[in-house]
Image (tube, rainbow, N blue to C red):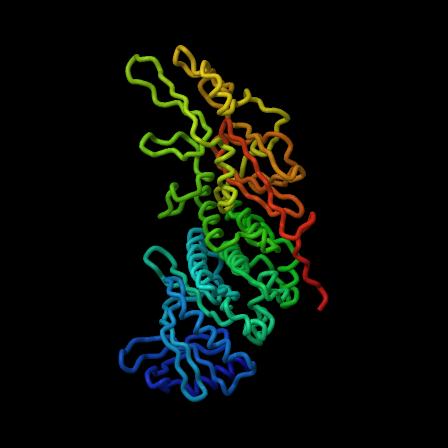
Length: 511
């Protein structure tokens, strides 16, 4: 028999039917936590059911287990959030110490994934809830450091799964680093669970780094999202050492290669979230959440998410209805509605305060997004490059302002800046792209990256995702809807400590 099964049976014999802390009558075992067995118990006065995570101090094989158990109680109880399990009490009774938590109904995410990947809408919903929960823990000065499907519980909600984050057993309270320095290697939650946690371990945790921040949880959340969509995590191995090495050295596969049915919408988001260098990842859980939301918005809005919630760069650039105010940073020249009847068409040309360069620059700090509908890919023409623009040069605002005669004495607009065939607009437009450093490469909707040389020919009014990369620089992802006159300036940020290559040293393969 499995030694852990022997331990559980021994605990059952001592606990079932017993009342702990004079208030909690133990009814049955319902699972196992990172450091103990989990039982259903009933409060002897209130009659309410709770979950008790019980540790038997007489059978401990790790000297730090009790301290970690107390740390879990402190961490979980400091945060009140609908997506974090509610810890209501902490009791001691002889050799037993117990964490008293709300009783949840449902199944763990690990149990759900055993039946296959989640529908995209459900996976995104769970990821958003995990991001919100961990953002709250980070705001409280706590890192979870052990996010994985076994530590996520799915309750049935009226509008889809409701996720709860569990098990703060190796969480880190930022103000207190003493326990961190005395703790064993980060990420190895318990003896015998080595193969479980390394599948979701960030590279910096795998290196045993003491200086961790919220980006280690960003990485683990991205691994969980990958598994929810693909059915398997990005890295597999025959043992913990192989997994740790892969997390530290191998580039994560593209989700669309592992799960073609999902499409390319999440490829760019996951590529950034799974960067080996923490400085190249999303800086926070909310940034990851917003990037995933924007990717879904471009691909196919899910119920409850509205276009107005997405970053402006991901929304279609068609002229807005009159009642909706335009964003301040738009360079588009818009023709207003003509007068009714036989009156001559009146066109008002106006330009807002900022150019499209300013609009794009304003999104440099916004979460990069990935967009394209699952199952959709850009037409071959969408990735073609042009040696020169095929449309007349688009005049800048300064040019327009200095030549008022162009808007003309007769009140008519200037000639159109593109050639049309009949009444049909061309299916492609050219977007001027300027990238720093000059040797950067660009990938259009996940296609093979190419050098940035002149304008890009892209499909008109079809959202595309551009991924800019260069050795030693953080990847930048931009999602936009191509339109005439659009110009894009991108400046890649050098990775911290990089001199032409990432600063993160690889994990050694030999142990």
